[in-house]
Length: 289
Length: 220
Image (cartoon, rainbow over all chains, first blue to last red):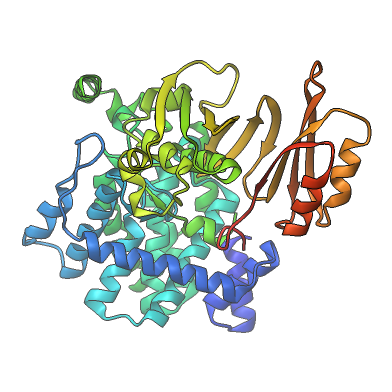
């Protein structure tokens, strides 16, 4: 279902938006809304638990290319951004690094982009003292936004580039923030569209094909894109192009990306000289161990 | 695909296709025959090229040990395998015209041997493509019966007569004409109960029987 159709139902019924999303899920999949809600709650609680456990930790990742970024960022006193951004960014980096060291993560929507949504969910809880109930409603709305992308486009980096993975994560995170602060689904649509447009065209170019560089740090920067797009939408700034059309555009861009820029580890920064020499030395290390 | 697949699942990183999918294929082996005494993983394509950086090896080993995808011990599967005294090895080979993320798992337990081939087709979804040489396309989302049966008229009818639940898909092929052996793979809508298994075991045509059941939480 299109986002505009969900909005239409909301305008016609004035039901709480997360309830509309759950009802729509029942129509599409036959799943009991209460069960879906319970399962989404579990996903959210696992995110919060893992964010708490891994916040600013050092990790030994599979390749060693990352592992201390969350630690460095959490020990640093930022000069420009708010405490909210600082916490959200630390979580995003830490979750990315936990993922790269075979930690438990929630693939929301994918493993490579698993830091963005927990970043905002955890910051809402820690900094804004969001209640579990309000957080869950916003999380359901964020999931609904992600579901529109899954249905109308793709969530896979191999099919649509990084814009499909981190772009969707950022749109979902921006939706969560916007719904939490405004409960206004129209603002949610604008925030999500703005987020996608900020990351439109982003290629999937992991060094060596491994989910570490640039994935971990992209989670860290993307969470800030989610925050600023939400702030813009809350300020009343609208996306000129509606969310559904932005998703369609993202899909078309993804399909026109060459294979080298879709998770093959052959193009983009993966093709740089330094990247290639790093991969060579990682492989040599493995052969020797 | 729905809300839960978009916002989940809970898994061990770092990759849904190279880690989660690999684990799910290997876990099918565990559900089929329990923890094997000896196992060989033959890695193909992208699995062969990148398995260490994605923890594919640890995920595969965790799968045959029966660990679930969100178990924090997935990364410690080498240690757990040693604890159980399992013999394991990883080989690299070209498995032919198959999906880039494909693994062939050869598993031994007591005097039983099975080989399962499966592909991780993206987003953590899998297809079991071969069981003991018989081609199939199982998603792992259905309870499945794998029956080694005598290749004689009426065998399939006898087997199906025992099963009371609705059947989603059936694969049947003669695997050894000389010995008169066939293999039936039956995907069901629901788990079978003990009566069905007893009925099947009593059949003269059933040589070996494996029941892959879905556990709580795997089905919505």
